[in-house]
Length: 271
Image (cartoon, rainbow, N blue to C red):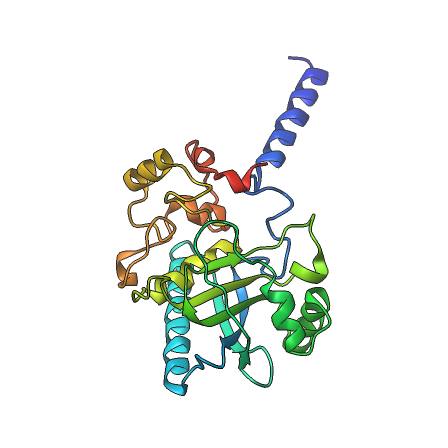
């Protein structure tokens, strides 16, 4: 092979390699908003959402913060298994850790839930918009990785609100998780695992169970390959769950891609 063809082949090969780095996520979503990387130092800013008819008690708040701490320490241990250093800090978003609303809508897992929570809660906490809030909070706290976590004192299916580069920064740049007190049928839920599951969504993880955007055949295959992955199932004992190869690859911990990974891409992560 002559030098010209060798050089041409090398350029094409290198281009292909660069194109596949970080290819797990659409370029407009990964590392786009306030929750950039699930590594290094990450700050969780929390708020308790309540209504006049259903205020949070001091004891319930302590319980939720303890569950948050357990979930984040589990994530730290999981990151360590992939030789990734991760640390969490937490603090209330504003001077008053509770915000009262007239109504808190439930989450149903339909994909049509309200996704502008950050905008409203940030305004109630004294910020003009989500982009300005990130800049001020980042300067004030010294953290680049910021995530909001809202505890809602009502029932529902918890969900994450991620940012994409093609949407309004002023409304959506601050990425957030909404955690309900219980399921929408009033059943008790494994809050620690759900918090960890939803936080992973902010950094690129996909659901591996059947949803409006994920198919049953992928769910069944995930049960074969990643039976204990927290994106497939949640449970009351975090020791029985883990961040498996696929999810670790999606959040940037696992650098080794397997051919099967891309097959699990859900509909709402289309390129």
